[in-house]
Length: 433
Image 1: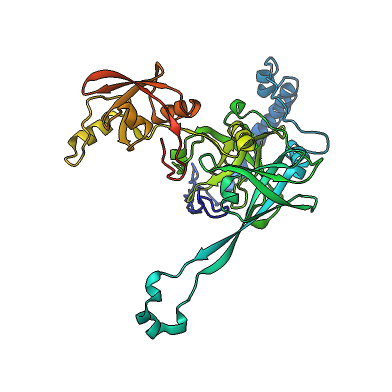
Image 2 (image 1 turned 45 degrees about the vertical axis):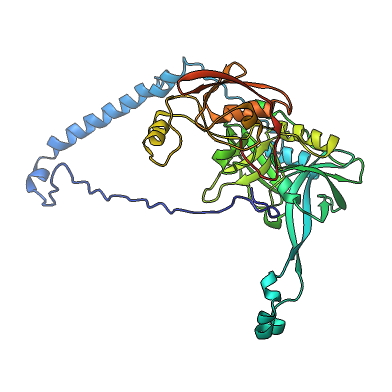
């Protein structure tokens, strides 16, 4: 997730497929003879009689087959055909158009601007450089204004807008434009870079709002509809399906985030950031946030349940406390164990084949204070077996700052139990669990 305004993980690459075909020549089974034989005309009855008899049989056969059901009819007739549930299409329209008509007025464009100051390196103030370059060297700091455009959606009629944190990151001014042409000055109530969620407040009332769905109930293969302002093209609609759920931040390529992303093949482009991802009923199930460069049809959205939970905390106190242990982990496999044990430069020697390997412990972190060490292999969290690093990260996220997590781990062939008290996530370092 890039830090400049609405710059996303974007690259595109197209590979042309080459279709090959083979030309097949069919050779007749018998050779063709174009010579005319007098013997054929000498015995016409010999040839005409079989032809007439054959024609009669064909006519009789047609009448007989006409009185019988076809093979297809005989096969289908006794079979009950299962009814396929109809898509939610209304008369004179379709479910995508209906969803867009309902939600579109609550989708907004967010324009942000920030002033960036570029300071002149101190060495350029040296008289030696001044003597040779003179006025070509700037004498003071230079400033420029960076502008970005993203999307958002209204969740409360009194002007509460949800968007991505990177859309408004560092913004001096924020302007919210509605589909009906009205514009409002927006105030950022809070932003959470760990989940990339931000809340904006505009002074208005009786605004159109979206209906929030339940992202825990979505399934791969269901319809997905995206609305936003990609590349400055306001109110653009794309559609596809839910490709997958629970994509980890490491899989998406943003290890500093703590989100189980929704994957969709609905087209997501720069400017879609912060816009809603809808189900076929027109309910918001996610907030579009990122794409993977070098791929097509791979867009990602923050589940709306996560976005709503973070938004509630931002509205209440302007910030979010994320529990933090201060370790880097890797899911242990026999291959990883072999690689580590055979590497002469590795300071980790592993005896276990399964579990979560502690690859790093930050100094003065909650994990360090609890006694965790590099090379420890975590097997259980609060009595529950874990098989991947993502499970531990989720367990930490579900805990509370100042609470207690009990870890069962293996160290040098022995089983140990440690109690760790998670601390607040140091967002300025953007360290992953």
